[in-house]
Image (cartoon, rainbow, N blue to C red; front, side):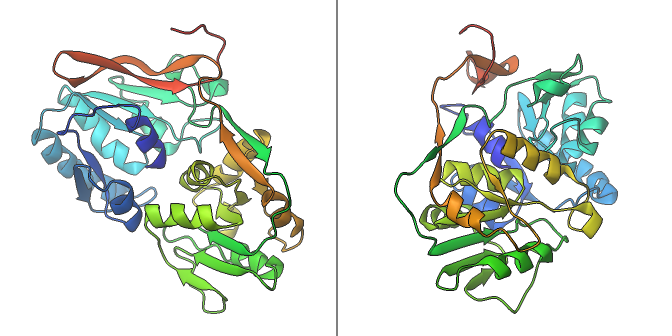
Length: 327
């Protein structure tokens, strides 16, 4: 949802009849406050029955208005909406998540079977005739030194909200390396614990999480796309705790691939889940991300015209690092 919100924000004047469809969570309520939102029942990871059940919901929603485009970054809910939209004559666009650094997700592979659904990747390395490269919302970020020493007095730890996957290894690692005199706030998701100091929450609204990130000296998070984007947007270089399918912490190991991408760009640091190497907390406290505006060429995302008002044409745009000239 964080990626899709960034794409949507590229429209300066969205049509008031435009609609968001997502699950009813504190994050969604906070992020989409003031928008036209239709909340639907959650569809879990690789939830076949939930996906099929949502097909009828998708049909009813699409029948309720006159939509020009349906755009999604996944996950399973995209399989319910995009093929139905294309069958009803609505142009369907799927932008694969940043988490999929080398190939399409299961959702993407399914949608790739529908020729009428246009598919886009944010990584040039695996673009092809079916998957067009569209630039990346990570482009043009860099990390700089804050200057001066910043002691670690306030730590925020977020494990995301994905259900039902616990992440006790990250909790145990952080317990072992937290400075004795620091305050700590936990956002635990499915990882219920009763042995933690500081404030512990299951979920936090998007706006409140952003405020906590800005106030923290260090932000530690699981290697989820939404968490990383929110960290950068709020001035934090994230310390990444990577979930592993081997330990039952996620459905697969896409977080490992995404973490490697973030580390290769210098936009984050890795948490040692052995509980050693607490010097990383001191290191990131001295760093801050910076977004260069207008650096490099502009890349269309996606390269089709989108009607956002009567007789008015606009395009998606992303400031990418390409070799093409300015349009």
